[in-house]
Image (cartoon, rainbow, N blue to C red; front, side, top):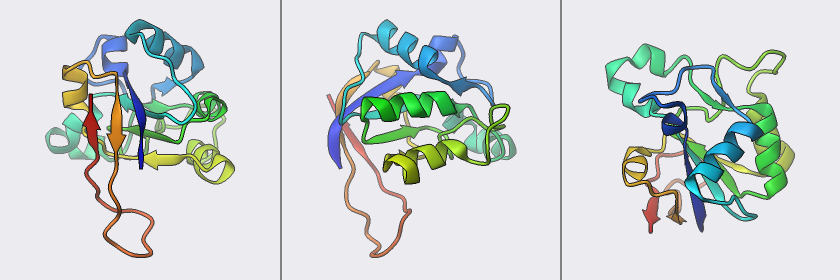
Length: 160
């Protein structure tokens, strides 16, 4: 996968190192951060969220693996309407957990994957991108080594 990527620094938006679990990013938040960073989400883009969450993986693994901030249902529908190719984050599920009130179990996954064919990229180390304020770059994701698998550890590359 090779495409233009936009990284939205949600931690900077909220003025925190780590965005609080359950915080859902919907259209208003996505548009506000994109405007603040001077980027426009376009058809064919990959949108990546920096929340600071991956920094908890060793410090607080129980918290890291049980809850997280992330994309909300309305935000997922908005990104699908923009024609993005993939959505990723420095979280293990990309979507807000606990789920938004009234949401089904992993409903954001359902909106992105089976309903629209939008790929999901999880556990991306976004810390250096955020540190460098790399809000727009070329994203390269190599081929999975395992034939027939649907999930694997692959190291993407970002080039500015």
